Image 1 (tube, helix red, strand yellow):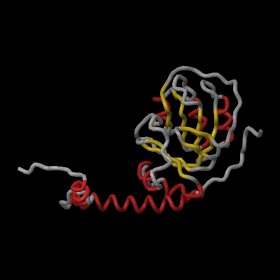
Image 2 (image 1 turned 90 degrees about the vertical axis):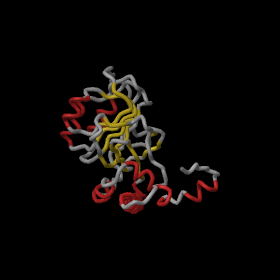
Image 3 (image 1 turned 120 degrees about the vertical axis):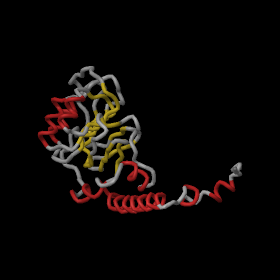
Length: 225
């Protein structure tokens, strides 16, 4: 088996820019309520966000050898995505590797394991999303695959798929579906903005969400004043 695949099919820069305008929740809903990674995986700082193609790597728990290899081969704008068995009790990534990624212009780090040196990483300005924060160290022992499909956060992710993350979580978009997802996300965003405007104009939830007949059919009883 070839462990490291250095050539992946990345989406266009324009597609990344267009998709990055939307929230993770909007994209998840717009593409049919799919693609959301486990809610365990969150940014170390709520102001962090990113959008970019995935460079996938599978590490053994408490082992960051292949993460370092992945950083070496990743290109500017890539998101390094680490599947490490959802092992919480390990700081597989910290400020030293964070600076290595920042120096290469990488877009973000996402892992289902733990990270550390979070204050330094926040000051560095590199978006880091993880399943936990742990100060416990790691080893560099086990080789594994890079740019092969991985399962992380209950989703299978292929190299070059687009990952988008913000304060609420991370969502994946298949690279061959991105144009449709951008269009659907824009339609959803426009509809929600219009709904918000109508609320401020005096509309009510029952009226604008067409709930009156739904609730009547379910037998909801309301005691009027």
